[in-house]
Length: 183
Image 1: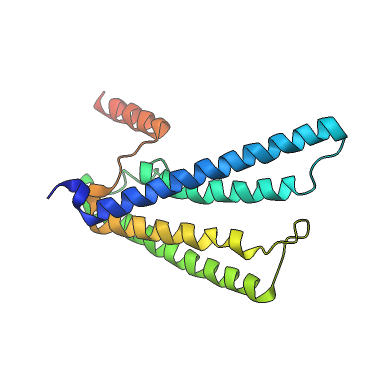
Image 2: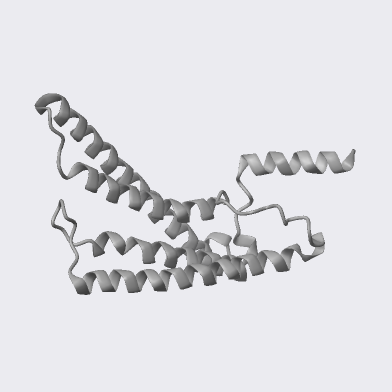
């Protein structure tokens, strides 16, 4: 069985591909809206009344999908000051625990987000300037946390699928600290 046919790998690759497409589409929408607004201001002296709200919504999509992409690439922010407090032999267990806790956190926040979206839908809340329902855009919050829940749960149960730390700055700091400790 090849690693690409292992179902968790297919799920993680599919999530990452979907998130990339969402970020690209939302970013294109954001750039188009801002460009149209600037052109409108230059030609007519007035901007497009809907541009700021649509741009804001596109930015929300970028951030929510980017949250998953950061986790999938190992470049998300996390505190590292405690990394050397416990013995290195505990690292495999701590890695699983870290991802399990993150999965539970994302699951809990995702459930809260579902409640917010449902309440917004029940109340029929609409955007003041676009007169469109708000809940479809809000729906990306629980979706983002649900995909993060799934991703970190898979990392907890299949730690070999976890990406390496891709943050260049923390890698450089870690290398510098290990060099100092060897000297």
